[in-house]
Image (cartoon, rainbow, N blue to C red):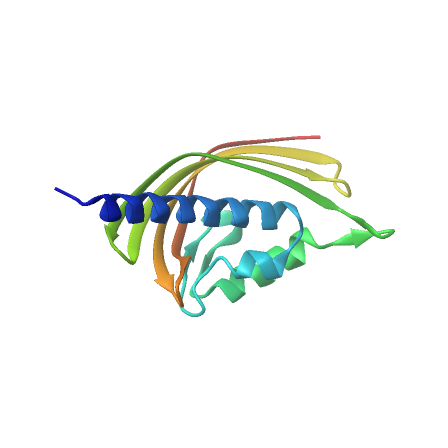
Length: 151
């Protein structure tokens, strides 16, 4: 039977992973590429963001694409506005320093230049590891469930 200390460590790890993913969503919405990058392992993240954004062997590639799209400005205003609502986490600790997770995301994006709105439902399949004492995302694969764009 697990000790109280073991149970507490498990609960703390699960909460730290939840907060990690929430920091990631918040950084995306806040146009914060540095904060977004900090959520991933230092090197070698396995990232797949579907046909629209592609695959990356490191978080730097994802952050570069994110920055190119999300940080566009016209007349000192952001052109692309994003809203990430992550929910329904299912996190499983596989060791004291590794875990897997699945999340549902409701994503809304407004493109002021194109005058379009996209609403998307997708699932994340993640792996997490402890790196330098903190939980980080080591794998992040996205599966689009449905998407609709309107002008």
